[in-house]
Image (cartoon, helix red, strand yellow):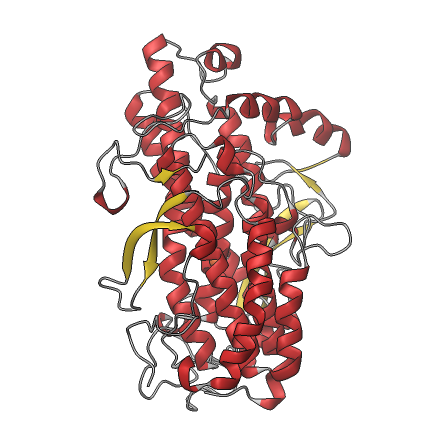
Length: 481
Ligand SMILES: [Fe+2]
Ligand SMILES: [Fe+2]
């Protein structure tokens, strides 16, 4: 039987009774060497021999699922972990509302379901590839360890999707699983499937923004897949969400500590004007307007991940019971949406306006709205840090029409305030709204590694508490010479 505890006696740790599922175990064992090759080629560069204080799942029980220990990353026990099966779970939305949840893939939805799993799966190794150079410039061992934790867990998320492909989709599932190891982030011939996962993550502020904004898109996608009527997908995503929470913690606290350090340095030096870039930067910290620009970039790249505001695919996924809404079961409506409408933002006569669309085709828009609301709460927590320091500055999420490449606003230039503008105005403003080459160079110059326990690079404040309650001087990574 499936259980809470993870079986570590098989080569592939799992709580899905792989030991007696010979065919799938064989398929996974066949895939494993290719995965390790991929990890060694594309995983954290320069640290594969180092001992990293990582957590490994020993149970899927929310109270106490993790064990911490020093591990060499290539020896991390990646495994297959699903949240426990819920007795009597039903399909909770769409045409099949009220029918028992599926334990096998419904034949008519096979292609659609495989596509959903592959798209989710493709993002997981992509972020590892994007972040592979960052270890070398880590601002502390604490941060380095967090980066590597995120990396091994994204690796595990790939395993999670590969398990579904190999167990439920036969031969084409196995081919898709191989292709997930073949594509590469940013590769001209075989890029990753989604835009934001082909962008560079050149520095640590980008990494923190990525884990705040792009991993949060991951959270929203996983939340809606966790609603799936295909029960194995739902159970997989539910456990992935517990890991995802840590990634967003890394992002939120990383940016928060950067803000805190900047404000502290400004206050100590008596700099009152946050826009006095030269003086702020001369203190060895990142000026707040540049942090705003980084935020604008990562927020808008992540908005693109939600796809077109109006989408028949989204409607089909919902109707078929494969992908629900954020917190579907907590929403008080008919869960079929056949006659409901939802306001979608569109550009009409040069102005951004809300237009009612059928709720079914507007599901991407709705999920994106939920995402924006979730982001906004985090930004307010950042603003509290700035406010407390006494510095007069506020971070603001830009308008959703700003700097878009997908959907309703892809062909128009819109200011961060949401005003449609011409090409000339865009050119004039863009370096104030998005990181310029010069901003990038400045941040890059700050990225000096700090590898002594208890020490932190000058641009970032130490965390309030350690991982696993470790003291401030704990050696989170024992770097191999
Ligand atoms: Fe992930
Ligand atoms: Fe993540």
